[in-house]
Length: 209
Image (cartoon, rainbow, N blue to C red; front, side, top):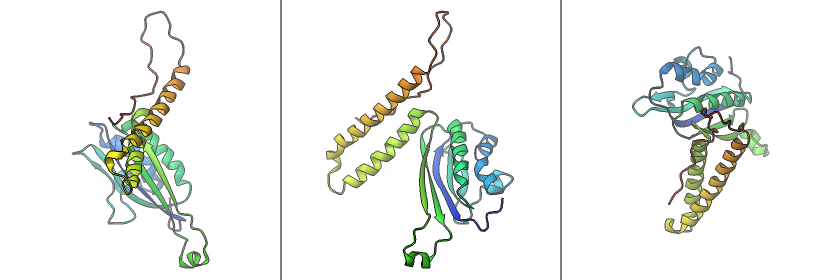
């Protein structure tokens, strides 16, 4: 796939904890949406970033972590690639994590800026994880980090416990609503004593105490 004259340079960034024992073949298949979009025939070839100073797509075996700092030229159709990527990484991830994707408008120049024309730059935050609880945990942790960092300009950290508790409440309610919706979709249990499938709600996000 040739993207030499592409509208965007697209940067994918994130550290994803991977289940211990995951082999190279599984990782290559999970990341295929990225390296295939880049026009490569393998992860080894397509895992290289557009920029040499970026590490690209690398698996840290010592820490069981997939590290992504990878840029490719592309178009808006790359958004479809992200959906498939997230589904694949959900299967391999051992904990919730975030993926940041930035679209840089390559056609926007100084003349456009001087005229006040808007660029088509865009930023997307995605979350992956082994279950909904793990994904919500990653979302909650990021929100707490951002809110606390902003409010510490005006308040001591010790004064923010109530704010964090309210954020935990909101995510707890969201998780409970998710579990309830899954329970409603389950068939009624029979009386035959057989094992019944458990709703896929996963574990509830941790709360700060």
